[in-house]
Length: 70
Image (cartoon, rainbow, N blue to C red):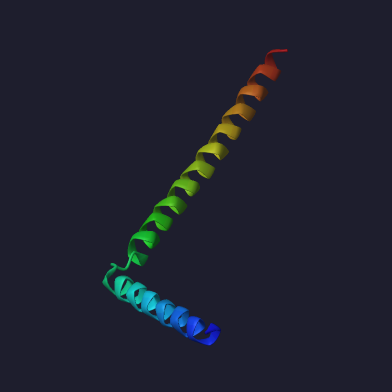
């Protein structure tokens, strides 16, 4: 009885996995979209780093300018 039960469960699992595979086959490949988002993220991170560097330069220039007046 236990053996029959296990066989039945295994058959159900196989059917579920086959259904899942069929569904996955019909899904569109999202890799290109993921790569595009990653490229855009990298671009934004580069721009952020550049702006942060410029802000530091401006702060340093400001501090140096105020230092000259003291």
